[in-house]
Image 1 (tube, rainbow, N blue to C red):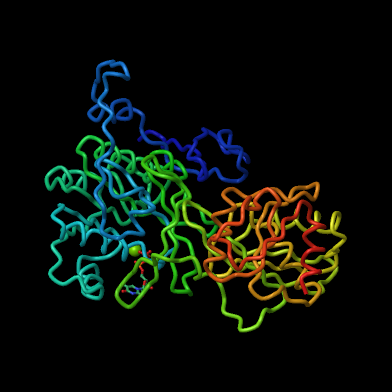
Image 2: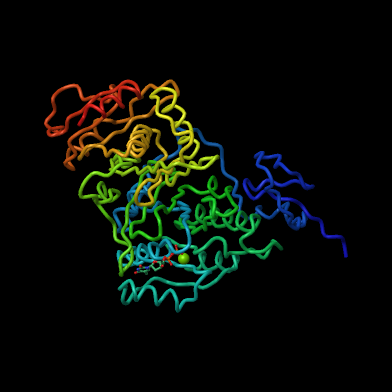
Length: 458
Ligand code: TYD
Ligand code: MG
């Protein structure tokens, strides 16, 4: 027997190398190459031949570019992140921690699509048909006509898709599917990539919309195959902590809609229910203002939401800790340096913890000002005034930069009854608009201004 060849595959980017290296030659990540059996090269040459169709060269003007047809799933919050609904032949990857509600949501969506007359197929590789049926009973989906296939072999799944020709199929999950063509184990980079590629081709060729469920690693990336993200049309991630009942779905990539759009759900006894007005769910309920808490208005996607940023500054040991939940830790270190240098607030010997309430992840720099005010408030043991909000990006030179669409943010805060705002000068509304009634707005240009304004507030 010929000696089995091995190769090394990067579990970050999926690139391969014939020998082991500390650093992946493709994506430069360290310690990510993992040994795997090299696939025999002979069938590889024409593995995709049957899938590739020859097409003629056409000019752009001659191609029919009708707007894509979207089929609403019947769940408004899901449709919002999808950009309006399921698209024919579109491939959606949906990732999230175990137990966060991926299977629940997709089963609910399939059921309402089936009830509206679409043919659906649910392929389960993790649970048996009986388990899926049990969940559907629990969700109150009595008499559901969704077809279920408990199968993990790619070739059989493809054959079923070809035979059943559903309008939408869910593969739960892509990590359990394996192809006979490869010798590696299900869930390995090679298998996941191969199976996803075949399923994507099948979706494009048949017009079936396919939803792939993917698992997320401890680091928060889709397990192994980052490659999947560029193969598919839409990437959705579940966020939020499994202990609270709220779940967020964020569109990371969408060829058919806006990115960073957020859908908000609440997990109930009967599955996930959309929350249509989520602007106030990320505020914790203090009867009186407490030190270390500052509310900001974040605007990710198209909806402004109010999020409470909490900070705790406590005397630390010789090497103080900086920890953040829901916010970028490097950014926190930078903000502490700016706070020291430009506002004279020193936290060198202090542990600093910051948290965005409700398990929401905030990536926009408009959170900077709120983070800094929360830290100062905790350090001084002095609460910010009641009904206070702040937002704005803070630069290394101590300048406060405007946040995109500041007026919308201010309107939302005014609508929810907030009364004092410290915002970047450029975000100051021009005229006296009725929408900002009840909200006193203090424009600031620099971080030291912001500190003085806050000190003068009470
Ligand atoms: P599930 O959809 O199985 O998660 P995933 O597929 O992402 O791993 O989510 C199951 C969790 O949701 C489980 O912990 C129980 C809870 N749950 C409810 O609270 N209400 C319900 O109606 C259902 C079906 C599940
Ligand atoms: Mg599941």
